Length: 596
Image (cartoon, rainbow, N blue to C red):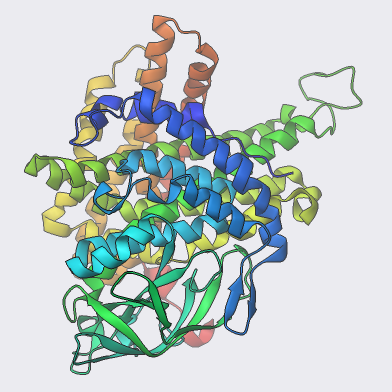
């Protein structure tokens, strides 16, 4: 059966010991966010996700959303759960107090998001999309629009969406056709059709705030002619009450592989009244504020599902009896040993665990830099944090969702035939996880973003906040008595990343297709090396704790064992990835289209 208990001890380790409480409390507005304040928040989030959201996961998958006469009904229990979720203040956790939020940093919020996604990925999309819309409105809309829309969105009374994709265009938004016609009162009439709109229509809130990409009549062609508009489901009266229904309607919902309790809508805008967000023809700039927030959130979705899949696999492996241990009978009082004694099952579970804990550390590192970019008063430090976040956004989105799907697949493998049928629920993780590799920009697009935009930006400036501290750590710890044996092989992996970076920079200048051909392998290589660095730092913390004496020796010993597993069994993937990168585009581009 589906098994999930929030990994609170590891979350506390990442937040307080690896990333460091002091790096958070030194930021303006975070001075009081010590473990005494943040730990109870995480503990309460664990209760909400385990007791309120997790029991609805299978129900939501079984029932799905229902569309009838323009109305979408969410599955049994979802509306009541959202009400309780909203009343508990969970929709306002990381939003600014200026708009009714609690002002918590992203480094705490992302851990809560992981729990929500692990417990019920479909449910997570409703508040998740609202948070992304909040960021776009907060940073780009007029003060008047902020005053009207942000407080009820933060309170969870209204939800938000983003409307990009059209039937004929997805990633290539330059082909977008939706039109916006200016009106005398400063509003616009929006006409067009959008598809794949998550939470575009549902029954859990009073109003839905759509952010819609559209073209003005005199807009230039391509992406330079796209503007962003705020289009509510219901118009808002001057006193803040809801008025007439706007011309924004759901015309159907998609029947999907997974996340069936999330309403994925086809939207029709028929002279729907909307208001400009940001500058005319600069809609992509405003929308990317939301998209970048969502890309990091989608990465956390992959982590959440991967963690739930791992826990379910561990639970089954400890219970399922099959065969005897090759090293000798482990449970003579039972008809057979549990499958967790077998090396291949151990390899699978250790791989899942090492990926999950490494990905959690990476998400927390990036989230802390997001907090620094948003809150620091040091301009140089803010710039470094912004550079790092820009660099790592595609890595987090693609790596964590790839791993989430791989872990879900491995969970099915651990269950064997019982994993392939619906009775145990792990096949839902596999189906749910698959979408995270696609939406908010496919993982192939993330790889192209990394090598095409981020790697060479400002003469490689974005790379420095990652490469410099890693190189310094290797130099400082290569002879360390406790972790030096792990640093040496890691240095080879880091060297492979440096060689790959230089190679792509060189060949990409002559032929952009060469860089594109290497992009996916490069992103995976970058991700593995980033996780390896965090595993070394984790090992250093754990070794110091054990040396000093601790009543949590089992936890820190497990951390050391997992770090060693990652360095010895996963990091060596760097070598074949580098070989593939150096092989270039020739073999993949040689055949004529007709030969496929």
